[in-house]
Image 1 (cartoon, rainbow, N blue to C red):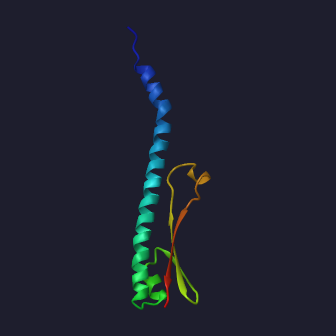
Image 2: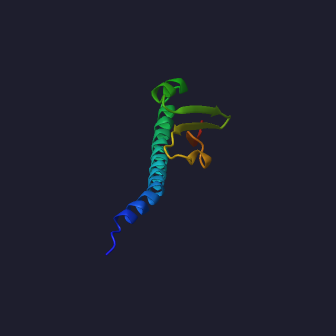
Length: 111
């Protein structure tokens, strides 16, 4: 009988980088989706504060981790809220920008 322990070790060493890359990609996309969901909730909070009469500078100080901009129009106000996510997967910056910027836009009536 032949001892196949060496062959199994070599096969494991060859497949390990692919498995680790796949794991990092899954983690990166999980972080992106989680940050997007969190940004949606934060945007709802920001809109509520703005409708309650808080000015944009006090809102920006409360949510200093996020980039918040307000575009005023005659009929509508447009909030653009963005957040940067650092990627951990090597080489992922060729597909997505690093840091990956997530944006949420909300348009509300100012009437």
